[in-house]
Length: 112
Length: 116
Image (cartoon, rainbow over all chains, first blue to last red):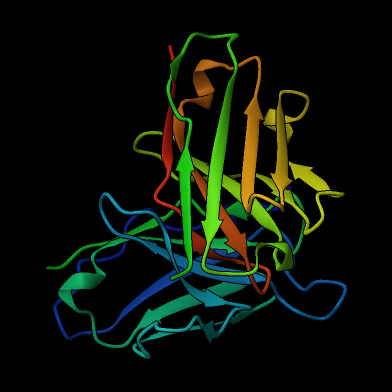
């Protein structure tokens, strides 16, 4: 199984400042079809997960452009260019390159 | 409006069975793979199972293989998860989710299963 590793907590961030969350996979996420199926989800307290990014760097419809994804192979990053209060929550990366699909443990974003 | 609504969660004893349902609306159900994801209290997300558009392909995480069965009724726009031989560690919120672009793009609100 592919193990996804995320730090449990990000450094508290000041409103309006950038934040970055890392995700590392135990093996390359490049699929045999050439795509990299790494996605990011946000989970606010008491809410179901909300998808943000698919295939490493593509935003789902309705996701603000302050969210961006990057990376390749085994190392990936979610960036929030200017953190807003509503961005507080836990962020998960997920790989769908290989069954079983696996999630990172989640990274909590807090406001300073 | 695209919507997924789960139901069927309950308190059940170890070794018992439960069937979860997910009613889909607002989109062409037959066009999408579907899946179940669970989240134990205070823990992270765990993928449970996927099913393809016609129900002919099922995929499971190892911990539920042989105990859980994912199925769908395309005539009823519904997804199901039959859970047998339930264990304490199956206690979780169970989310129904629609696939899209090799990600889960639409999520329900979840239904709680407690095994105790």
